Length: 288
Ligand code: C2E
Ligand code: MG
Ligand code: MG
Ligand code: MG
Image 1 (cartoon, rainbow, N blue to C red):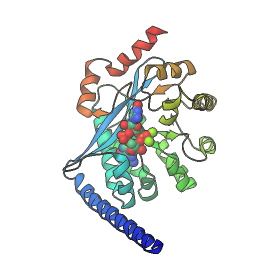
Image 2: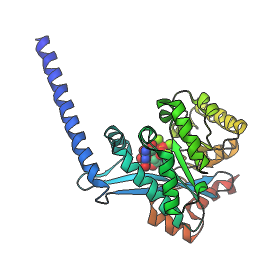
Image 3: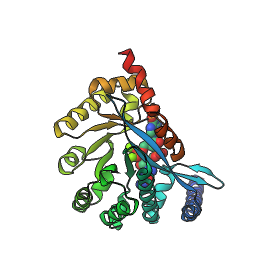
Image 4: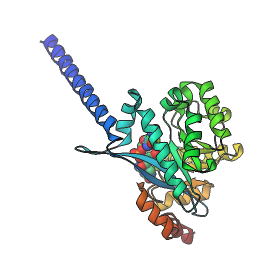
């Protein structure tokens, strides 16, 4: 009896896995067509100076509007695209689109683009970046590339070589989701980062966990002594922002300052007044 149950359970798991594999394959096929069918879009999220509230840049975030399943979040389809190599054309599309849009902005804000480890492994990334900059006319110092520690771990020396070539173009590099991966400190010493993006998990706990606050402090101190500005991700409340101001954090990003939004909305804001960011920052500044 027990044996029968085990067999049943195994069968159930195999069936469930088959279904998952099939669903993934179907989704991967849909994704292949998504680029051509215009189902992909970039949203932009503002990055601001903590002390002045000034806009510093916008991070481009990939969106997929599936014809029947609706919006599918990047954490679901990017791993899939990385598995089957689709991330290469996809990543190129993101880079080209983000640079072209940013080149059309009236203000010289930076545009930040996320890169997958696969793009480092398989594409001639510095050449691609260089070509896209020439093609779109975006000044290199307005492009920031965000990488995660998984990119570095994949092949340290190769990544370092590629990053140096990209930096030689005048493009800046940010380390994303900092504090969640491995070998963070060694990474900071060896890699030429221009910005540290502190993972949003620390921000969500800053008010309840003294440990989270201590880590934020430590990273800010580290950034200061290494002369690397720190951006806090996931800032959702005024009190979180006040803490960041008190602790001397350089930049902030999060729903409080602005949610990721389509280019059209961002463009309207940019050309209207100084944007949501300034409004959000004005309140706590008066309170102090
Ligand atoms: P990320 O690069 O760390 O991007 C920040 C994520 O945090 C975004 O999620 C953003 O919408 C979300 N976020 C921003 N502010 C807040 C906040 O105040 N609270 C909360 N809870 N979340 C906030 P999104 O757009 O779902 O993207 C998830 C991840 O997918 C990104 O994390 C990035 O790793 C990846 N991704 C997105 N677009 C691309 C892309 O074009 N290429 C690659 N390779 N990866 C991408
Ligand atoms: Mg990012
Ligand atoms: Mg991040
Ligand atoms: Mg992330």
